[in-house]
Image (tube, rainbow, N blue to C red; front, side):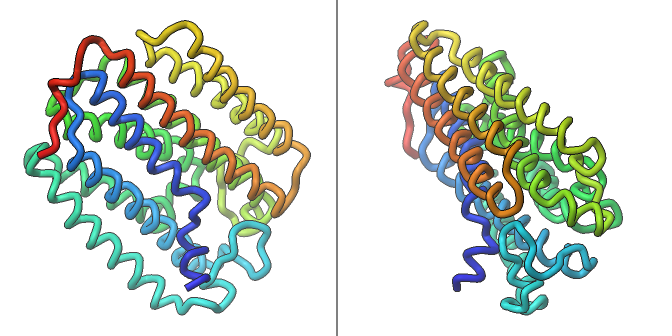
Length: 302
């Protein structure tokens, strides 16, 4: 059980939760909070990320990209703790469960959500598998912005409000989550750059180098929290201090990242993920307390 829990990479799961939390904040802001679809989105997002993590471990093992004793999270398949076939079955079982969960959202969002769910399932595999794995060709960061930022925020809001707002609040929240989620991947690839380069896995850190991608981390930390502040348009001025504090905490992690090696970077990764989650919770609180208008009569728990 310990090896399976490690394979889930619990330190990174707040990333998928953050998109749903921020999307719920946008739904509240636009007068449409609904508990049941929100919870379904939450389960869907977490299971999709776990399935993607399992697929990443299985397919990287099959391609010989992992080696024993790596600095990052322990790879149960590579270390011989988990049978490759068991990991493959677990991956596709979770994807099947997620498809069922996602189909239940048709009740709130309509049948056209099916291709959206299919795209998410494909991404969960295409990140590591297929003829052109995204994470192996410098596209992982872009995919994270889309599938951990834009997609969960926009569609979590939509299934609760049944309206595509796509205004400055929603888009700022979505891209804020996406940029800060990309920082989690940057730390992961920053840690593994030597192993990835030797294995021919061309992450953005391998392509552009550690120095450049550390600057991208810096930019994302500032821009992501600024976008959160912009999303909270009606909040009192004092709330800016919260976003500044979160950005400052990210910059402390940035400084630590630059002087850390190997397993030390796992702590930077964990806290980068946690800060994103904390920021999304604060955004939810701000959008709930200072929305466009009174929303109490709009709440529904179907």
